[in-house]
Image (cartoon, rainbow, N blue to C red; front, top):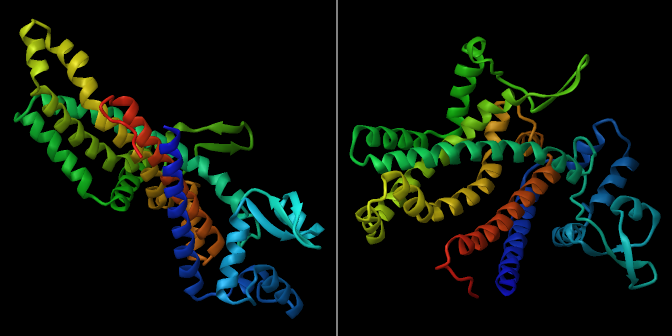
Length: 353
């Protein structure tokens, strides 16, 4: 188990290195002046020179890349002075040269070109909102998807089965951004008086009279929109898995022994049929966190996707690069978790090197 996890972490590290290389050189190939974005148009030459020096923009591109990797790495080498100590918040391990030290620190994603705030503070502050949205969408999709898939399997080739499959195919076919627009306009605008749902809003909102309050109604529309595609896939996955299990010999044996249909399905069929569904659900959580970008933007949900799209529009490269790295890291960690979960749920699976 430990050897398997270590090996997968090593593979994940290589993937992360690849993402860093691609993202860095891609965004440095795009037009834009980072110094002008940070300093504004009415700054003196000395200020612009200072910002360019801090960002390492006067160095060759490969040196800029090495400096960026050095900033990202928890173990890094820096000049030991008060400004770097304030900038990185590092802890010194040992001295390499007269003014160079090996330090340990949290990864430094640099500062936003627009707000001059640390990128990690911006992203972490909005990541939780994206997590709650993805979790709500996944819970909704899992409950409805598994139940609908079981109903379709138990009523194979009936009108109810055809209806559920047809609706699930439509759910897979419609792009997420289109369904977000339709749900926002129909249920959040035209029918808002009847649904009580808002076109925009946050999970926590501050009222000048009542203070900070929880508004669960604001997460309903974006969660439904984000959960349509995984719900449709879970329906079809559950149905096909249930049909496969129901055709097994031990199910026929259970029926021959006189077990009721409910006990046969609940005790024998459902547990074995849900193995692939559980792993798919776990993997979809990472996909939803990455795929929530357009949903957050349309519903004005202040999450990781909303911040990233705003950063793309304003060419705020550090925020976009930091967001990409965080999403890649989430994918890597959840994929490792899914592999382990699959082995736990299904005893036939063994974690091998």
